[in-house]
Length: 449
Image (tube, rainbow, N blue to C red; front, side):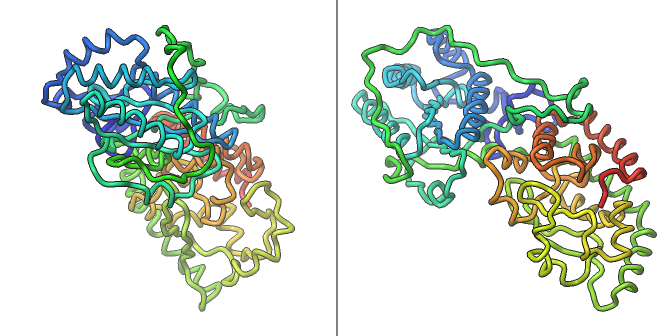
């Protein structure tokens, strides 16, 4: 896998755009020991059942979608043979093949030294047992390798189970994980044309094709896999990690450059307007703060402080529970077209989206992007279904598909699908189109409240 925690992408490699983390695929990043590139390639040609890295990544994404849909767990066990010999690598591969179940997939996690095993419908406890059995066989053959277990559960893992379950010793490097994007499998018939078609719309991935490799030996015993939550310690020298952190995708360089340039230009253009609006808000309620601050969930769910002009009465949050029965949007979000907490000036600012101007500061800080999913409140995230949490894999934005497609006219589920569509298709051209359409959406006020 890549040599940072940001993960890898299953999309086409693009030089310098941030899609692939720095160092991926560079010859100078390969180990300098006895396992050189040519030796790895030669060995790879002899094991046709070993999946290429790109295909293995795709299967992990597919398994994630399945786990989200069925609220089931799966794990990936990574074995790191860096610094060993070609003969030792061959022993590792033969051992993994012998222990492979019909539902397991084996492929390159990061060439040329790390091999991964995808254990479908297997919680962390089952992966512990599997990993222990593999290490025992390898030690009996005189081979020592590092290992790491990445655990994922569609219903959401208890993070304590994976963040504190690391034992000491040598392990596979924490070099990334999947960060390519998938939209929710179920498609909506009501998605707008911007994301339903066109040259930048997300295209469905082809179905997984059976490996041309020979099936595992029928005599291979099934590994003893536990059926429930983590109830045993990781094998000695093996790290246990939360797989969700590997799907998080930092801002590509082109996108960060667009954000800084666009936000800086907007700050200069709107500076006089910023002062006038601030003065108007202050005069409307002298004792209330001009800027409304609220912690929201950012990249990976990490909280950040969100800024906008205050458009509600000072005790708006205290009034929220009493108004929940009048919520007009499905799902965990709260929206009202005629919210009594909004001030007269606030209605104007919201209708014109001028209350969003302070978010330029969030963009400059890197908490948000110009284009991306709308950051949710911290109390909304625990109520998400598993597949909806995937919108947190990328940085949230001021505007996006939802904002230019009608905002509050769109139901919550379709809103989430729009965000995943953007995550799957984001590009410079897509962002520029969204920014252009945002101008029109602000002018006509469609979906604003």
